Amino acid sequence: MAFTKTQIITQIEHLMQQKFTSPKEAFDYYDTNKDGFLTKNDLKLLLNEVKVNLLIRNVVAEFMLQSFDKDNDGLVSWHEFKAAIKETKFK
Ligand SMILES: [Ca+2]
Ligand SMILES: [Ca+2]
Image (cartoon, rainbow, N blue to C red; front, side, top):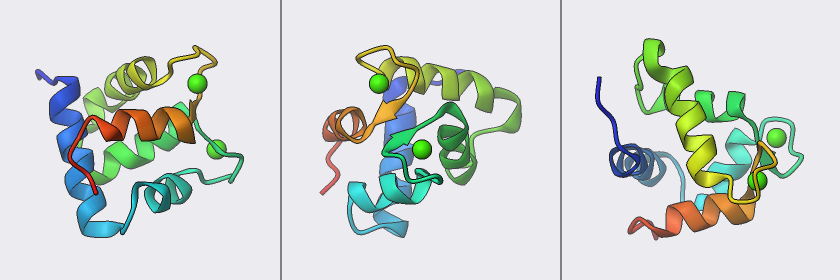
């Protein structure tokens, strides 16, 4: 199954507009342990909600982590998340 960063971001954007009022609210929701970072598992939770197939979820989570994680610490900070979402038209 093919997927691109744009397609995934678009899916996430739709989810957020339906479920959340702001990207920060979404970030806080998926940051389950409230340490200010999203782990790969947190991203998988998000991908579950945007109906990414279970078979590719792990691959997509890895892909998202790599494209969002600018400082390569293996975590997505609020700053990195915001920067990724900013590429969309989310308001
Ligand atoms: Ca966390
Ligand atoms: Ca990071």
